[in-house]
Length: 398
Image (cartoon, rainbow, N blue to C red; front, side, top):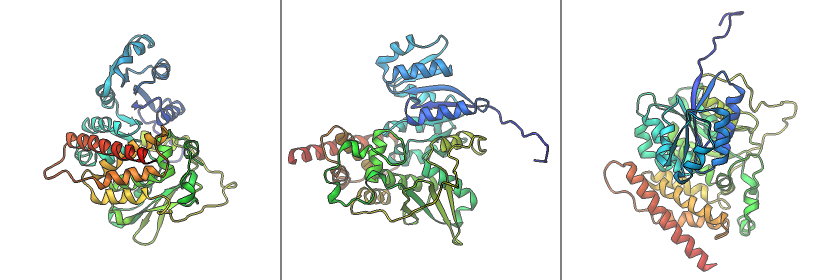
């Protein structure tokens, strides 16, 4: 651009927000509010938060509102302004992922798979904050990514950082990916010290504000293990070239080391609006500086190896990822069951890893042939039943 030449204003991008009432969804709305001339929200959806969803609809005036719990559709419709179409159920949430140029998948857990597949099969850009769908559904997501126009821009801060750093070189020049971890609330504690962890302690993350499931995953480092699998799927890098580095300040969100020894890192203050905005505006950048660093106040960046003895979930994820096929789906399902049991007070924090291990040990593989969505769904259901049996056994033994 020549000096004095006006910058061309990009056209407005239509956006659908699935999981609009959650942490990712509400922060995506913050990004839209900060750049009203860049984005137009045409659809929002949530599982059951009728009051919050209706309030968002009254303010954003989308064309579509989806409610996963179909029994609440009437209540929702009565709370909406005229002219907004209500769609329901899993199909409704998946449908709104197809009606905009960019679909933000902020659904929590395996339930996000149908949204991911709907967006990709419709040839849309997917701003992906639901790592479980690409992990558990890897075989079918790979197929959907081949649809013309389909692309995934990751919203997880670590994968968004890797995505940015990978723009500095070719795939052949990448030596390894370095995924950073805050270490969670229990960094530095031994395995014995973690035996009596309470729920409220696990939910007290030192740097990030997230939902309860993801926060517990961060405390066990399962979140980081799942992110390793996700990085492998997103960027096609072998597991032996993906490392985890604990970085408690959460300023460096991930790094890429190149063949000549150069390391590219993405730095910012912990603010999910930055990766959300990156995914919405890609390949351009927004003019709003989310997460800007005050360099006068930044004095220390620390790094250390993760304690694999105290946090065995990390190695379980590497094991499942290297096995491939539907093993990651089994691990993901087992973890969701175990975390729910922990949050309900049925098992202790340390037992989360035991449930994941016991479930993964029971995995026998899918047999031969190409895998389908039904295979993924069946694997998820079988793993959940197995995990529930492991949880029940732990409860009886306690």
